[in-house]
Amino acid sequence: ILLPPKEYEILKYLMERKGQVAKRDVLLSQIWGYDYEGNERVLDNHIKKLRKALGTCGKQIQTVITKGYKITD
Image 1 (cartoon, rainbow, N blue to C red):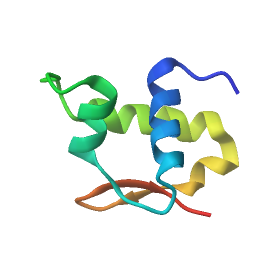
Image 2 (cartoon, rainbow, N blue to C red):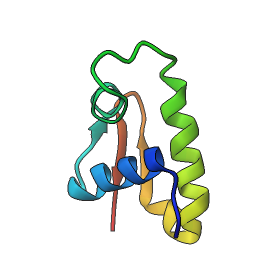
Image 3 (cartoon, rainbow, N blue to C red):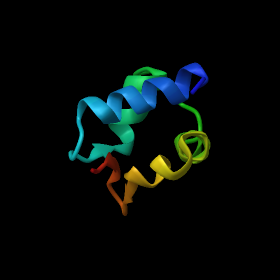
């Protein structure tokens, strides 16, 4: 699967922490940088694209309401 750089970085970050919740603010600072001041909805859009690119495996990326995202088995 070919992924754009940001989606790849998100997937890698989540996979390295499989089963753990990655908080939204941590993902934003780790992927976009500590000085990112844009809209946090950008993360949601990239997650949506990543899920679509992964097809049925995209269901493994779960939203943890008010917290962030995690990858499950």
